[in-house]
Image (cartoon, rainbow, N blue to C red; front, side):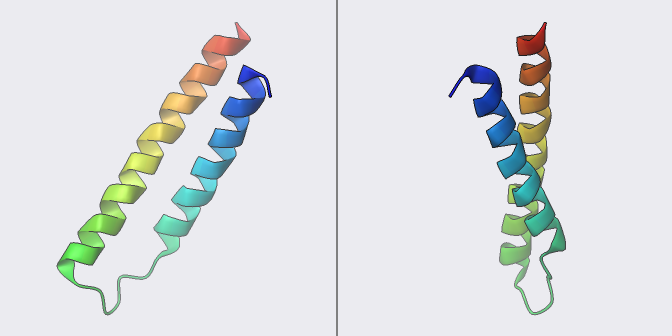
Length: 60
């Protein structure tokens, strides 16, 4: 798999992670569990943006 296809695959996985974590319900969860979900969501967002930037650099 070449670099661009690998990055696109990782972007797709990040999108899925973001959508899943963004849709998670916090009902009945402890503050610690909610914080963990939030942390994973924001890390997925950061990774998504970094991958998009890397893809743009690869295409130039």
